[in-house]
Image (cartoon, rainbow, N blue to C red):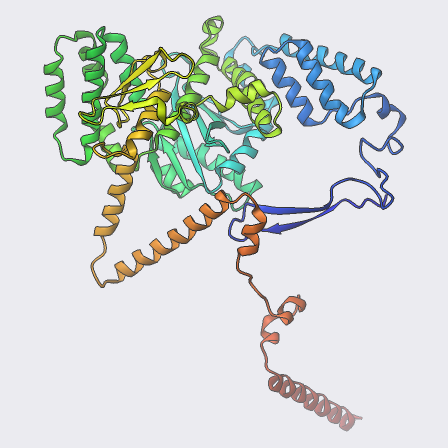
Length: 595
C-alpha cells in the first residue's frame, strides 16, 4: 500500500527439503523514488511517541541481557546497546539517555531476580513452569507413580536444534551431577557450523526407565516436527552404556553411536589422582586402552583385568577404586562399544568441552549451598549458560565481540590442535613409544605424548592431567593417521568392522545381495550430494547443477480438474459428448408425448 519495492524469490531445494534459496531483488523497504516507505527508518510513518523511544528488537534485547548475565561491566553493555539501537534510529542524545536508563533498569531487575520463587523447591518449580510455558517441552510432576521430569528448551534452542540437527547428529551429555545435584541433568547437544557442541535441550530427572525416556523424547520430536515437518536426525550419540537405546531407535528412527569420552575421562582422572608416579600413570592408562582396543580381537576381558591388577598390585588406591567402580560393569561397557559404532575424537572433544564449561558454571564455590534445589539449577541454565552460548553464536555469525569469538573458536581441543603446525611434532617412528610437541608460545617447552596414535594416549600437560582430551594428543593422533605402524582410531575400526559385516551378510547371486547393492548405491548418492553441498562456497552453483523435473503444461494449468478426465483421449471425450446429447434428445421426445 505504500509502494514498497522490497521483494524476493524463494526456491526450495528438493534434495535438501530443510534448505531454501532466497534471492532478493530489492532488500530495502523503499519506493520507486528511493524513499523509505515504512518501518523504524520511516520517520514520517511512525507516531510522535515512537520517535522518542528507541527501537529495541529481540536481538538487541537478548544481546543486552546476555552481557548482563555474564557479568560484563555496565558501561560496555551500554556501548554495545547504543550501537545496536543506532542501526535503526541514528545518533541522538535523547535516544542515548533513554538507552542508558533501559540498560540500568534491566541490570537492576536481573541482579535482584532470584531463583527462589517459593521456599519450597517443588512449589517454586511449579511457579516457574507456569510462568515459562514457552520454554518447556515436557513437564511431569513427581508423585507416587510418576517420576519428576522437566524438559527445558527455549525458542532459540529450538531454532538451533532444527537448524543444526536436521540430517545431522544429536549427542547426549547424560547423568551430569548424579552425586551432587538433587536430580541429574541430561543435555542434548547439536554440532554447530564449527562442530562445537551446542546445548539445545536440558532434561532434569532421576528416571532412566524406558517409558519415561520415551515420553520426553516424543515431546521433543513433536515440538521440532510442528515447526519443521520434515525434520529428522541422522544419528544419536550416547555416552552411557546403561542408557536406553530402544526409545531412540523407535522415536527418532536413526542409528545410535557411542562416545568414549566419559570412560576415558573417568579413568585418566582417577589414575592421576590415585597414582603418584607419572610412569605408572601412563602405563596403567595404556594397559586399559589395550583392553578397550581388544574388543574386536576376541581377548578374554577377565584374564586381562586379572593381569592388570596383578602387575599393579602396589597401587592400592587405584586398584581398590577400579575393582569397586568398574570391574562389576566393565563387560557391559565393552559390549556396548562392540555393538555400536564409535564416535570420533572431534565429537568426543566437543562434548567434553561442553561438560567442562557446564561444570565450571554450576559447581562454583558460591553456589554449593543451592545444589539441592531444582529451581536454582533451572535459573543457572536458562540465564548464565544460555546467555553464554547465545553470545558465542551471535559473535561468530555477526563477526562482533572479537574476544568472545576467539575464545569460542578455541573452546575445543580439536580446534586448538589444528593451530599446531606439523613441524612442531616429532614422532618416534622406530619404537612408536612417544611423540614430542613443541610449544608455540615458549620454544623451550616441549610436551611428551606417550602411546601415540591411540585414544588412550597420555600427555604430561596440565590440561591432560586433569582428565581432559588435550590438543597435543589430538595433534599427534592426526599425524600418526598417515604413518605406517600405528593402529587406526577406534571410530575407524568400528566403521571398518561394520562394513565387513555388511560385506559378509548377503549370499552370492541372491536377492539379499541385490538389496544390499541398492542400499549401497542409495547411500553413495546421498553422500555425494552432502559433500557437494557442504564443500560448495556458492549455493547457486549447486542449484544450477540439479536435474530439472519437468511437468506437462496441461497438468500445470488444469488445477482442480480431476485427473481421470484429463487422462481421457479425444475420441473418448467425443463419444461421451454424443451419449449425453442422445440422452437429452430422448428426454425431449418423452416430454412431448406427455403433452
